[in-house]
Length: 205
Image (tube, rainbow, N blue to C red):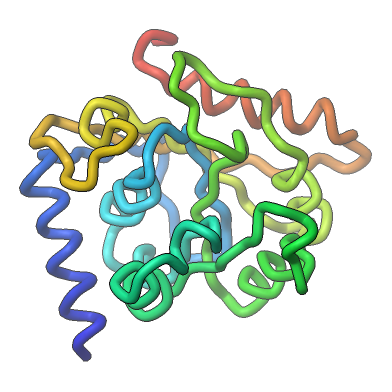
């Protein structure tokens, strides 16, 4: 009950602070899927999560860097008990479990995931090349829907090194779901997924 109250309070706080808006290309029913977005701050997944309608937000779990979210009791509590994050070790030598298997297990349990295929925060414009994890996850879960989400202005709200967000307007642009096509190779799929996300950027309109 406490965690649910904290989750509702955080969602309300984000909406109040950023005046966050969500634009949808089409309505989505609750279903296992991946929301993937551009990545420029540690607040990115919170903005996507808070922009989701309540029914979809209940399913959504962020895929997050274990080494960051395991630092300090508050971070551990938030990521485990409030956001129910899927924690991934970014350094291969520290891994005890396969990241794709962890994400696939979450999908198969009925969860939706929030992840960032660039793999690291992008301090520049546009998008970095996508890492291959999105392809491998889609290949392991063939019916998986992948929803691109472009986050506008989040870089200014949570610049690198800042712990408290600035009160600036943010927008999450949700695109149409896509799936891995039969026989589609890794390079073609990642380029198509990246292009679908870039097409949502306001300057692309």
